[in-house]
Image (cartoon, rainbow, N blue to C red; front, top):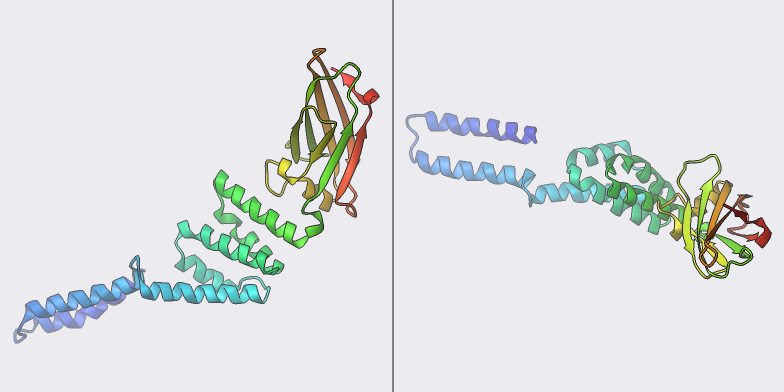
Length: 257
């Protein structure tokens, strides 16, 4: 942008020299017309509705889409253009659109490269949620068999527990103290945990399956009729060859709290 201003300044020098000539007539017209022309040129490059700026953005879009079509990482030169040409507040929208296009086109190498590069732009909590959702969409598209991974927990109630409410949480063993799945149970004898039970997109049941994780299932049950609370806990090594597992809790496995 500074370059455009400097170029405009030097373009005005011959006009100023001409105006300083005492023999120059109609100086007012020359000043007015010259000023209008220079400002039109500046606006065509840096104005909000700059058609030349729009042309540059279109060229950049075509370059990035060509790399996506070839399923390669976006070239360094193209990314440098992206940094210089696109305003900071618009970078997220550009990247989000390109990543989704790469995922929809099954261009996973390009999508992974774009996601890795664009992580720097997603800073706030809302933006991080969008970023993790993009990562999840890429993973589910790349590994469709595990997109709907599920853990079924079939359980028998403790004795004298006809009316109850419970909470099931699933953690990665030796992982963050954040559940990859969490649901409430009430009047059911089957707890079904899947990716919708996760609070963080991508940190979920499918991720645990793909990484062959051992998960820690923690189940607490409150018997309303007897005002008693029970808990049970189990470790399960997930089988990557099977996108779903069922775990059975017998009535004698509950521990009264």
